[in-house]
Image (tube, rainbow, N blue to C red; front, side, top):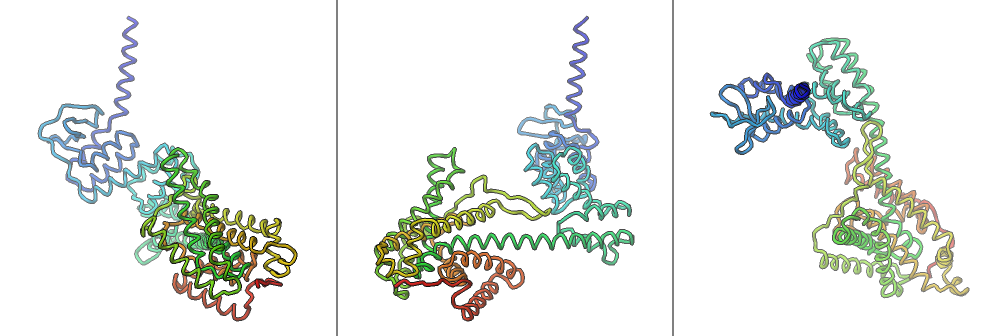
Length: 528
């Protein structure tokens, strides 16, 4: 007698689990019908169930694996097996079943429903990506699913996105009060894609209710103000980012050209060497240390510095040491060296670009001001530029080498007379500038592909930064790089990339005509 209650409890639990797994037949039946509106509505209602079984039905519909029997019931068919989604169990293959026809409209509805189901994924990143994707085009039919996701969501950022999605879908509700509430709910959004939608409501025949129109005008004003502030902040950030890239590219040249008076046309190829060293470090870690692959960048920094520095020392000892005080000859000699280095890299690595992937900790970004994404790789480069500038300043101002460099720069003959080994100082200084160029190549490898012509894209900009900042002036180089980065980013939206470059070049020419010494002048410089 005690066995009977246990069996009843077990049966109740089994029936309960089956009931949870099953999908109501009245939701499945329209999928086998001919009414297109009913079929689309059924897809939205099935998605709103937010169950794994609902996802299986929608996936089967997308994969053309959903079949209909003559009695109107639908089945998921996989090879020789059939599953009845109404009871959630395998069943014998019915006779006379035929594939459910899926037209473009229904396929789009299914794709939207499946992407919407990612709102219920366990991973935050998947839910956030799904909410952001739905912002591009939200279907009112997805409202039940979005409301279900909002009820289950605990993340504040995703909750805000879901609330905006609900408000966007309610903009075309039949009730004026609902439309007004939806318009007012969008006032806190920073999405510029809402402006055309709200503008359409203000056009003739778009929105009949005057109260809703007034709410739309106020919401548009708030969104425009927020978008303008976000664009301003974005331009400032990307200007600083571009300035940091220019600074890393030009910092080594500020030492070799600014302090030593050498017009090094091979400076871009030293950047390239640093980038290819990063590529080789990545290849080594990927082959021999796959578990530590994300740490390759930490090994690439010292490797790129020493490889580029050694190349610079070799160039200085073999070619450049004989050309001090002869700027035209150094220009021609280093230009020839740059061609040799580019051809050497093409011979070793090929003419095609190679890819240097960002480590996982530098992928993605942080969202600020509601919609401005600050990529982690650019934030890292900005921080890296600050560290490199501080390190160079400390070397030049707080070390014995820096003291010798400044002495040789200001009066080479007197430094030689008091026992300074000027030849050794020249070698170490050129090696230091070349090593810093290698570090700049590491940073550039994180922003795009690496190729033999990488350095050619930055050599002109590097010279402009050094000349504008003042020959031999570290502070001037920093200010010039950041200033050119900001000006370029604010001019590009107005004049285009090409005209912005031309305008900056014209400005520098005029500025140098008026102030040949640049922003800051070096006193007592002598490289004789």
